[in-house]
Length: 265
Image (cartoon, rainbow, N blue to C red; front, side):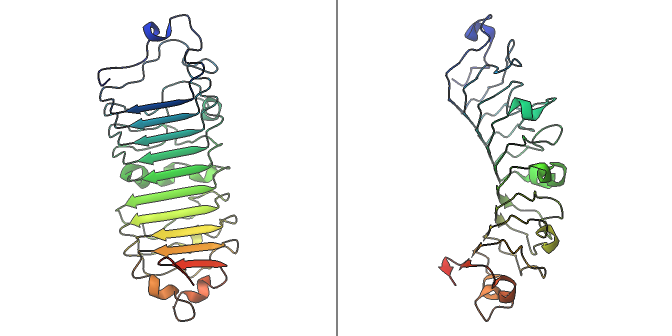
């Protein structure tokens, strides 16, 4: 398996316009020499995988770009992990929305050299859920990735970032459609940026996990739409959020459901 380099005409048949017509899920793991090598039909409508709904790439050591130049009309979920030579997820494309019209979920874990989602800094506008875990360079380039343009994004989960990011999130970084924001294992996060929350008029849930240096909540009030606030593993913040006695309690007392260190208060 590790010596299989790509999918070529000799595999698919040189005159097949839609090979793998009924494939729904594709899982490539431990493919040390894997490289996408589509020769014919890759850019045609429906491409090689007209029914493909899920792609999972794990530990593909030579993969430089996550996805091939191809149209995936049915693709709903992409999960990529431990692809340490990958510098971008999507290939250069004139229309990323046309290539990925159904994509709803993108999960990226521990891709150490990943710099951007695509050369143009774009993601499909259909995207609803985005998970980024342990991708230092991608997080460092977050202001260039046009997240605020994702008009369908409702869930954003950001985890394992060791660099200084104070304050976070930056103004205009996130889209107004966001409903659920999760921030975890930001080792050097000391402050949240209230200005970065002001425009999040759809936000319903905010989770802060294991941010050891997070000292306090912003002076600006969180959006009035916020219904669920969770704090776990934030030793400096926890005492400030206690009902009635915490210094930050007045900032969150309007939120219907509050969980501090696994206890509802």
